[in-house]
Amino acid sequence: MITLRHHVLTIVAVFLALAAGIVLGGGPLSDVGPAVTASSNDRAATPADGSAGADYTEAFVSALGPPILSTRLAERSVAIVTVPGADEQVVTALAGQVEAAGGTVTARYDLGADLVDPAQKSLVDTLGSQLLTQQAADAVTADASTYDRIGQLIGLAVASKVAEGEDRTRKARAIADAVSGAGLMTQPDDVSRRAPLVLLVLGDDAGDEGSDAILAGLAEGLAAQATGVVVAGTLADGGSGQLGRLRADPAAASVASVDGVDTVAGQVAAIMVLQRSLTTPGGSFGASGADGAVPLG
Image (cartoon, rainbow, N blue to C red; front, top):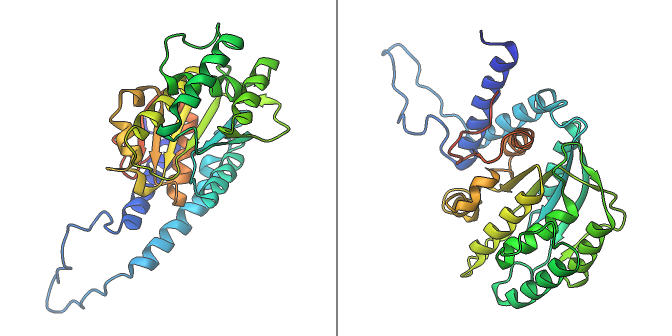
């Protein structure tokens, strides 16, 4: 039997997909062609204004989002980790959606430019080796690659495998302080908790040789220490963009992804993917996600 909740979620999924299609400029009926007149007595159809349609869809999703999200992240926390160049408005909107879903943002951590710069690999490797020996020999994979290792270390500092989250330990604080002290990350001064969920928000698509491997390593490393990791990108990041390329990497099996978070529809989808990640890893969602616009069920 189809429940009312499932029926409502199905309707929301349709509108989220519609929103993504309109923003991309095509919409779900873009291939139908010119309007066909049913009879000579019918009036010619008036073309809809694309901008008005997009505005209406965004307004619709904005109104429907809060009751649908409601308590999806109740008593759960999220650590937001940003890649250099992440859009401030998008990050703020995502944090707001977490709170609207009943969740808490434990902290925002901004990765530094040197951390994702292939030319600074030696710095990242040296620091990671030192921290592995001094602080995390029992918690980080000894033979991990440079960026997988630093991702695991950052994950150990900000995330938890416990669904309710955990207090930040002295070891976690020492790792975070060392990474921040090396200029590879910035963090708030008053962080007290580690979150089960990590939302990794993409920034500039550097396109440098090695940058895709850096992102894949970081994502996989974070996933080793968190209950769930969701990598979020804009519409441009999907397809052949940075998020699209990550989805083709084996590392994508351990993290979920959603593109289109520069739209309200994508932001709502990101919350639904975060909730799913509490119990089910992986999945590709959003405007160009192989698993659909949003996870249902």
